[in-house]
Length: 542
Image (cartoon, rainbow, N blue to C red; front, side, top):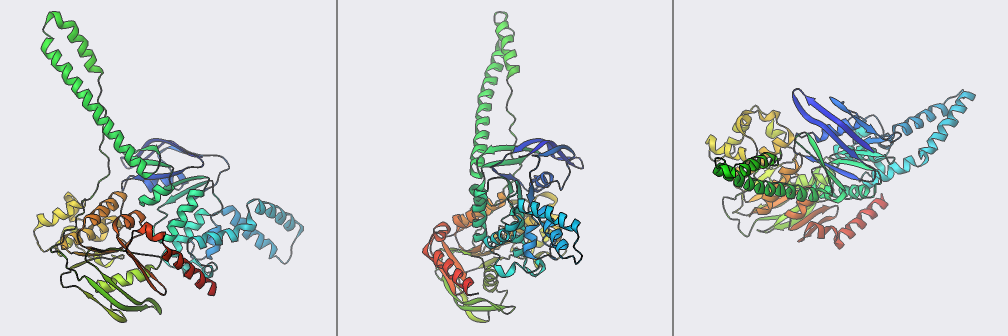
C-alpha cells in the first residue's frame, strides 16, 4: 500500500496540490487522469520519491518494493539490454555483480566464501536463478527479440529502448508499480501484451496514460486531478466520465430546486415582512433562507479544442492508386511492391509494428520522398494535407504562432487566422509566442490548425495522437469521425483506431493485409492468426 497524507506542492505562489489525502491499495490499478498541467507526472514523482512535496508525506508499507518507469532513454546506454531489465530490482542486480566479482578473484579467501554464501542465500530468496529467464520473457512479450538481449542499450532504437525500460519497471514483481505514459511509442501488439500483464498483476499499479481504451481495459479505479485536489472513483475511465457528469447534473438539479425555494421564501418575506400578523412567519422564513446553501459547482479545468476539418470541395470516386511501391532505407527494404486503391469513403488505419514502413509510405504519398520503384496517382479532385510524425523542421524558425499559421492560410487576415488558433486553445497573447518554444502538444495543435485551414479532402496523419492530452485526442477523434473526406492514418490509440477507421491495412514482410473492417474485428480475424504464425516461423528460421 502507498498513501499520500496532506500532501501540498507549491511552485512559486501556485499550489499544484493542496492537502491531498489518498490511499492506493494492493490488488488495484489506478488510472491517474487530469488536464495537461494538472500535475499527473509530478504526483507520480512525489510518490516515487523523486520529488519532495512542500508539506505532507508519502507512506509505503514497510518492506514493499516500489518500481517506476524511467523516462531517461540514455541512462543505461553503457549496459546490456538484459542487465538493464534486471536493474529493475536493484538489490538483486547488486548481488549478482558482487557475486561475480568475488568468484573472479584469484586469491579467494575464507572471508570471501562466507560472504558468497550469504549472497547466494539472498540471491535465491529474490528468485535470482530465474532472473535472466524472467527478463527475457518480459522483453519478448514487448517485442524485443532474443538477438537484442545481449546488445548494449546504445545499439537500440528509441522505441526499443522504451520497451526495455518498461520491462525494467515490470521486472521482479514489484509491490507498487508507477507507470507514466507506458503506451507511448509502443506498437499495438505490445500495448495488448501490456494490458494483459497489468490485468493479471496482483499488486498496486498507478498509471498515467492518454489512451482511453488502455485505461478502460486495465484500471479498477480512477484518480482525477482537478483544482489541486485528487478525487477517487471506483471504476475505469468511462465509469469516471459518466459518474462525474452525473454528479454535476445532480448538483445542478439540486441547486435549481434550492433556487426555486429561495425565490419562494424571498417573495414571502418581501410581501409579508411589514404585516404584523405575518411577521413571525416572515422571520421564520428568513431563518430558513439563511440555512440554504447552494452547491459550489466548479467547471472542470479541462479544455477541449474544436477540431473540424471542412473540405473545400467534394471528393470524386478516383482518390488514390498505389502500384508496386518499393523503397529501401539504409540497406533495409521497408516497402516491397506495395499496391492498393483508396476509395472515396475510406478512412484507413495503417497498423502493425513496422513503424518505419508506415512513415515511409506516408512521406512518399505526401511528396516528401521518392520511391525506388513503382508509382502512385492522386485523383484530380483530391487535395491532401499531411501531418508528419517528426515535426522538427516545421518549427525550426523564429516565427510567432500567428505568423506561422498565416503563411499557410489562403486568407491573410489576422482575425481569420486567430479564429483557427482560438479553436485550438491558443488565446490572447499565445499568438505571439515563438513556435520554436512550444511544447509537443502545442506543436501538434498548430499542425492540426494548419490542416483545418487548408480545406483538404484527404488527410494523411502519421501518429497524430502522440503528445496530445485526453481532451485533444477526444476532439481529434470526433473531428475525424465527422470528416466527410478520406483519411489515411496511423495511431497507437486503440479507441481512436476502432472508432475512426472503416478499413485496416497492415504492411507485413511478404506484402500487406487489407481488410474492410473495424479494428477490433481485424484483431480477431483469421488473417491476424495467420500473420502471427508467419512471424513465428520466421523467428524459428532465424
